[in-house]
Image 1 (tube, rainbow, N blue to C red):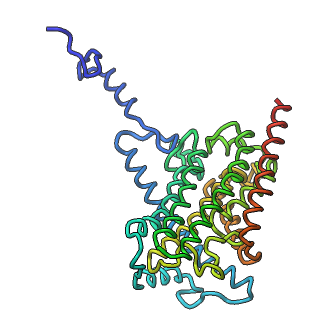
Image 2 (tube, rainbow, N blue to C red; image 1 turned 180 degrees about the vertical axis):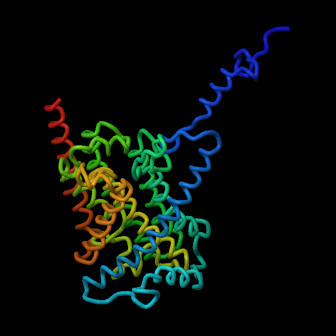
Image 3 (cartoon, rainbow, N blue to C red; image 1 turned 120 degrees about the vertical axis):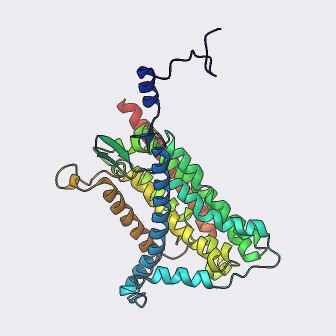
Length: 372
């Protein structure tokens, strides 16, 4: 009888050997979110819990952002805003959801049935997938390092840029599949607008990558320990945030759904909860772009000042506070500035933002090369 071997060609060892048992236990330890060791199948339970919390949290935040925007708009226009459903109108998002669920779901008879359903489904799904890689903080609990994210990639920033670009497919598919001229024009506008501003946003982020020397989001946050990148890269922040308005189809860059020109743009033929998915996806995208801006330019979960009592506040709360400030700025801009004309919007993207992005890369690369 020859020596018994495993499927991998390695010699089998006795099952009762304590050294083998300890080695198997060490190999069974997994890393959750990039740092927390969990034994055995607990890894998948923690991952599932994180996914459920993120999805429910994003949907809830997006729902209440609709109420917050109506309150901000009312304040700017010297009105009261929603105040009938619940105390101070706090149950208005729930009432809107119930209304959309029970409305009649009409659709054009000449639509493409499959793509007509795929469009709204992609609206918020891509944004939620991108949020899985954004780190909200790091905490040390019971000698374990817990990372507040679902997944961790060494090229997380590149992955997020790719996933967020998928969102334009939902707008174009929704506009094309409805077989309506207004919807089609809105879908074409969204495609042209995203292509124009995606390059400017990418060029703005290259300066951050040069300073941090990494595409890892946690390392980018760590590189801002002494000074946030919004101080070192103010032009890149302006370019990114301007492109964020265009990518989320927010005023003054909401040309794909210009009501005065295209009725409602790409979602003209949608009603009931299908329209609600597009509406929800817009606010989820707002949370995503503000979270990315917080991670890359505002120090992520790092406190405002690195000493007491600022460092007593948990990192996720700092992250949430910065995101809320950026969300308020987006709402403020929407109700302050008028919509740009379509040709001026395209000229602004190609003739202003894109050259400034190239200039920012050139200056940042030159300064880093001279300092090194």
